[in-house]
Image (cartoon, rainbow, N blue to C red; front, side):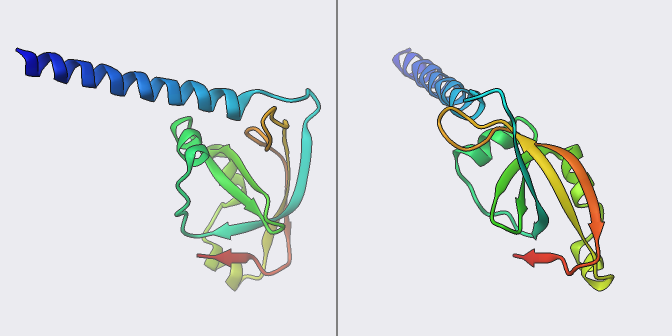
Length: 134
């Protein structure tokens, strides 16, 4: 009887901690600092293996967003449909055919630093070598 009570309390505590984490992430990664979106422009960096596991990555993946990097080092989170615009085929095929994509994305600055989820506003094919990394 006591074991079931302890098990139930542990389950409720775990659920409460997970809910608090989600609410905290929602505040940190969604509260906009200003209403004017910030624009980013550059060639897409094709990172083939995503090993980064941090709070932001886990939170964004739960909401269905994926990371996209620009060659200048900017990391943004976009929807899966927007990423398919930037990554329409294998980067190795792109490398073989000597082209990559230049994009323009917009995102709102956040109150606690960084930028919120980005929206792709322009995609242009350019005749340059794609930037690939593992």
